[in-house]
Amino acid sequence: MKSIFIILAAAMLLAAVEEPVWNTSIPDAITNANGKIVFVLFSGSDWCSDCIKLKKNVIDTEAFSAYAKENLILVSIDFPKNKKLPDDLRRANAEAKSNYNVRGYPTAIVLSPDGSIAGRITGSKGTPDEYVQKIIALKK
Image 1 (cartoon, rainbow, N blue to C red):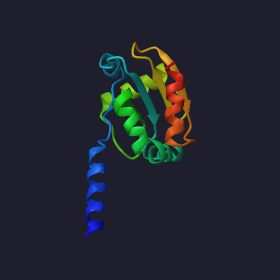
Image 2 (tube, rainbow, N blue to C red):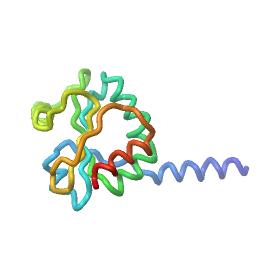
Image 3 (cartoon, helix red, strand yellow):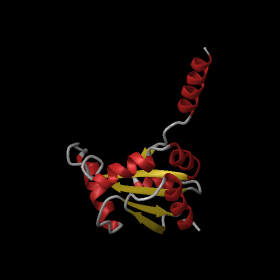
């Protein structure tokens, strides 16, 4: 009986950690930043092995999600191969890739709340805490 309560408590804790919301428009994210950092992730979500690894090992973790919900406005700029994006989103993503000079995936562009570039993070190495520390270092 005790183990059932432990399982229920764990399930309630997991349910309480909501996944952060990902935007698809950088201008909208900047407009709604309200003092938060804008984190723009350029990814090939369904074909890029490093992107898939980053999502699994960092982005989808509780540690990253908790930090993101409090401190970041998230933007996903995706270049999938097997998923069809609407034409306007595909064009906007290509324009963003060009504007921010993204040459490989995954690349995260960290923007100050005013939209200026604070820095970039490339690759998928590191723990969620190490990745968050990279973001924190860029916002200073």
